[in-house]
Amino acid sequence: MSKTRRPFTMKQFSIAHDKVALPVTSDACLFGAMIPLSANYGDANLQVKSVLDIGTGTGLLCMMLAQKHPEIQFTGIDIHPDSIVQANQNKENSPFPAQLHFQLADVLSYSPAQPFDAIVCNPPFFEQQLPSADETRRLARHSDTLTLASLLTACHKLLNHHGELFLLYPPIDERTLEVILNQAQFSLRALTQIRATESKAPHLHIIQAKAMPENTSQYLQYENCETKTIVHYESNGKLSQEATGYLQEYYSILP
Image (cartoon, rainbow, N blue to C red; front, side, top):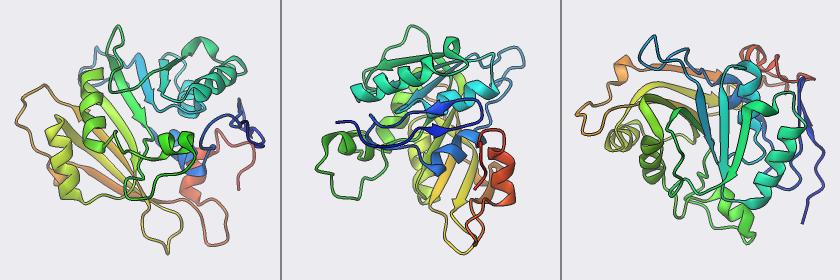
């Protein structure tokens, strides 16, 4: 059953989210605005031309990135049929439908014709919470079968050599993250902590990693990893200056 949710209106497009399990969130918008797709991925002659969005939902990330990168093609996959219906609806109502492609698919069995240059993902990361009685919300919010390790392994198979991966994920012990990334043949490039306000502990991490060739014995060196923290809101509820810098090209009205 469709939910009563008003479309989320951006400057250049609008996102309907009444058919999906989870609505558009401010954290997802900040993530989309902050994803630094490179001009190349390890070789100056290899430009990023294709990006996969795993668990695309409404297609929000694809559309935010399409606005910023008109030269790139974006594919979004989701296991929730209504999400793909909604994403295609949003695609047709957007200014850049030719850049967007949405498919019903499970990342663990997805087999595209060609690998991608980059992957973005805001995955189901509520492993420690009780499953929801709503099946669609359970699929969207829980990684009972899709753990971080299995997601990373699937991503590596879907990426070109030295392709980039961008994940929005809750805080995770750095040593644990190091081990999981290395087991999946990824090298950490940047780690951004997101705080809701200055006084609160980080509640999300943006993980940027690069795919390494299989059987590469390369271990993460955190001293070589770019780390930073961004505060989403001021204590008065307004966007922080830094968050405003990222979101002002998207938001019609800045909170």
